[in-house]
Length: 111
Picture 1: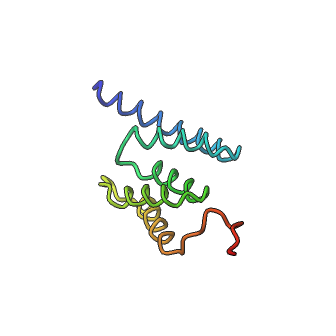
Picture 2: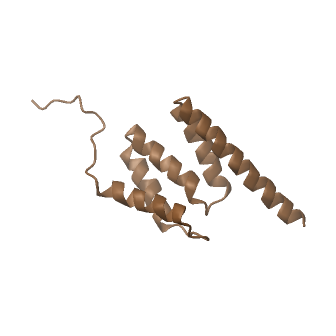
């Protein structure tokens, strides 16, 4: 009985952290979002949503190396419940893999 209570508390906390991450998204605070979503991702290892949000934040920031590392992790991870939402997130990451890499700095000119 106590284990079920702990699991409910953890799931509730994860939901709250995702809401806080959404708040940081509206405030355009990349560091706040990254911190919250990484904490959430580490709390329950088989959840796709927090890791997807971290990967997409890396993509937004132009950090393609970290985006690909997180994307590889997501595609290789064990998903306990394959929902359409989780499969859609994985499909979006695969689709972004197919796009040509964007250079980190577009202001560099060749001489």
